Image (cartoon, rainbow, N blue to C red):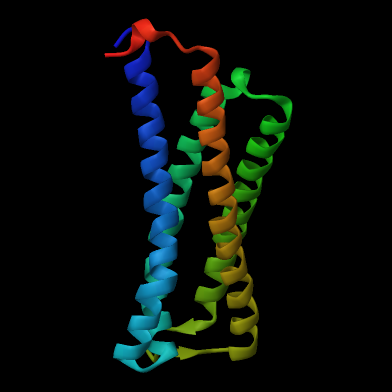
Length: 169
């Protein structure tokens, strides 16, 4: 493959895989793991002490993915129409802001949990903050989908503009 096609394909593949792992993980976690854990363990509280640890890992995956998305956006920025640039930048910034909110909420939620006793110290405050956490996570799922679709549009446009049949294997 000539003229940098292989690095371009690898970069796109890595960005898509990172998005799939992060966003797919969020959807699977919310749609399958949590309901199953509730069935097996029988307690929202017990499941909550498990999710407390898992969400930190999900948040780290989000940061890695957002960095890769930023690289993908920058790599195709000059080929993007103005409207697509607004969507790409807006979706990415929204995802970063939501991730910042999740990082801020997590320790606030942690402080309301007594891990040793497996008790919630202030249930009303906990559920208010937890609701904000869940809404932010849902926003990330939707924003991530918008960003992935926008990246596909960007790449499709870039490929159409720069198509060279000589580059095909």
